[in-house]
Length: 192
Image 1 (cartoon, helix red, strand yellow):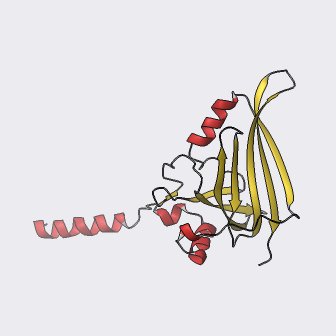
Image 2: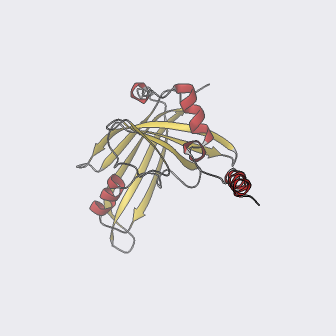
Image 3: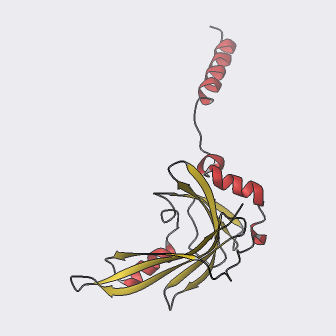
């Protein structure tokens, strides 16, 4: 085979095989419901509005988890660790996080900056195993003295409300000091 034909043949084969490769880009790591939410609401995250939290008819859901570590260690883990793992698993799938400090949009393959007030998270929730909806919220308060983090849902969600995460030291049934992490959700479904 002549050198020119060999080179053309190698280039053709490399193009053919490279087109078979699956390369993840930001579109494939961001869940579809999250992408649709951003398509509908735009990418001007600075102007996303909070939902109205003046309601009194919220459904309240409270869950507490005990962590067998000192409260300061658990608190610092939440504050310093990217929340991809917190918002992944079960019915939740991490989508994106918008950071107003550097105007960055982060997905699950990125190293997230530490949690700060003003950050926006958009995740995908799965109900009944197949119904996928986006949930968007903003970090509105991080109180290191009270050990509390608050998120308020953004407008245009399927639900209205806010969540608070509290960290307290409690004694378990074996009289050991443990950290109780309590998630309190104040939610009201919105009509579409």
